[in-house]
Length: 214
Image (cartoon, rainbow, N blue to C red):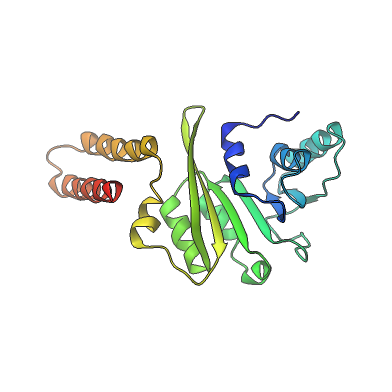
């Protein structure tokens, strides 16, 4: 049995049995293996830009005696997406995710994109809305001393509100508290003489607290 970290397990909440997906940046292939081993999806292609990572994924796939196609690819460039309707993109930053999704021609048949970015979540939510994907759900998990944000974006003409773009769905009290505490920590580090900088952060904290209380 392939046991997943809490971070990777969060992604599995947003897959369904009719998903044919590409695990972009599959690393050691553990998520791909888990999805197929437990019959959670219809099909998985495991892909990575790093040949050593992909070699490790192939070794692990063989260990579990599974049939999972693997592709060495920079993002989606070398992948046949003909029968793919879902993408999972995790373990990288928002700028890299934006680069991977920059070619709209590759997204024609993609109905769902599950992301787990390391940073700049507001920028990612805005970008996803801009390319026609609506944040349908979001899950926050704390794993090995760090919060991870997993977003499930559905192809749609709908747009998320400004508050959701900025702060997310805010459906986890612990994560909400973490966001406020992070801003307050920043405020504590700003010298009292930096009045303008302090006022900016105080405003951000007030706006965040209002969003949390909605």
